[in-house]
Amino acid sequence: MAVQISPSILSADFARLAEAAAAVPNADWLHVDVMDNHFVPNLTLGLPVVESLLKATTLPLDCHLMIEDPDRWAPSYAEAGAGSVTIHAEAAKAPIRTLRQIRAAGARSGLALNPGTPVEPYEDLLGEIDMLLLMTVEPGFGGQKFLDVVLPKIHRARRLIDKHGGQVWLQVDGGVSDHTIERCAEAGADVFVAGNAVYGADDPAMAVDSLRSMAEK
Ligand code: DX5
Ligand code: ZN
Image 1 (cartoon, rainbow, N blue to C red):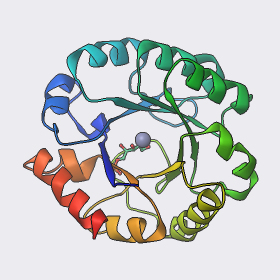
Image 2: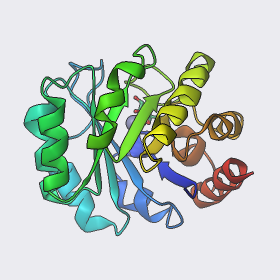
Image 3: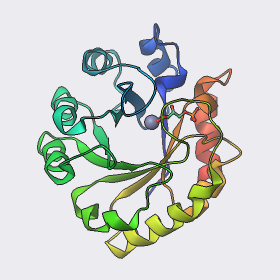
């Protein structure tokens, strides 16, 4: 699978989201962190903002739901037109039903795991998902330090995915930068979320290109 870069608008100016999207025309996705101040100790944006963003950019939206009740909300993001909707395994009460509803609404389905959540118990769900997201920081905030402790899990997830045919994309999110992306790629990740590394750069588009070339090495 070709490397894909998904800049996280969590690190952009929330009053200028359309400009943030326009600043990365070379990205594959725009990563949208939905936080509800319950699943994580931070509050960002929800469906109305996603609906507006969909009209403001041609980039597909990669919605990462860090919310307590993804079963209730995830299908609405897919129906609104998000290209990908990812729910957290730690929060979903009926993940199989919810993942199927996401797909039925025409979006790619994603399952996210916090740094401390093992991947092996979710092997049977690989057939229900288009992407597995491994958090490489504790979710909630941008600009945190990459957790090296997750690297062995990225390796193990890659092996599990390959055992099941290799179609599921493997995304990493948190602390991904020029300093950490190569290790993630070597471990088997193929979709890279980057917030600070893109929107903290003077030229966000150049940062996307630089991350991509480092991951492709
Ligand atoms: C953190 C979010 C990430 C965040 C990553 O909970 O899920 O998407 O924006 O930001 P950086 O790349 O700065 O760690
Ligand atoms: Zn995220």
